[in-house]
Length: 167
View (tube, rainbow, N blue to C red):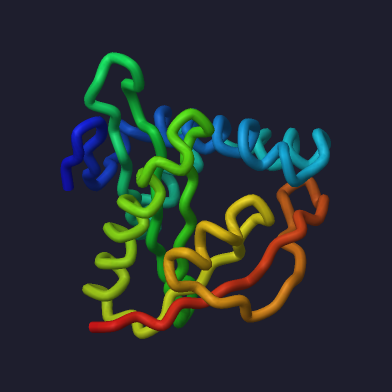
């Protein structure tokens, strides 16, 4: 998909460094409004290129938005689709400078199409507090509130959400 200032495409392993940078930027610029500095640091600490390469090797698919203009070049954000057991899952992260400009919804639509093509009837997300409204606006409903355990052992408050998919 192409727009005037960004285009979306499927990511590959050569994008791993840029996925990590966009992910960290999203957490530090948007997530920091909802979580303590310690949580933000722990959340970001393990986000290295290898995380995305290994995820792709396990079958996770990433869709990225890439800026086409000089004012905002590089990876602006991404969405992923993976299957955990019998559950189709997603995650969406957008750089703070590109937030609320259609980037997240565009990459999510690509990940959602990937899930539908893989036979998903529903898609799930453990939404950060920063992303709950984004997911609601993209058709998700709250299942329950809880915590996601970071690799450091700290608990990250989140909202477990689900979207029923149309084929």
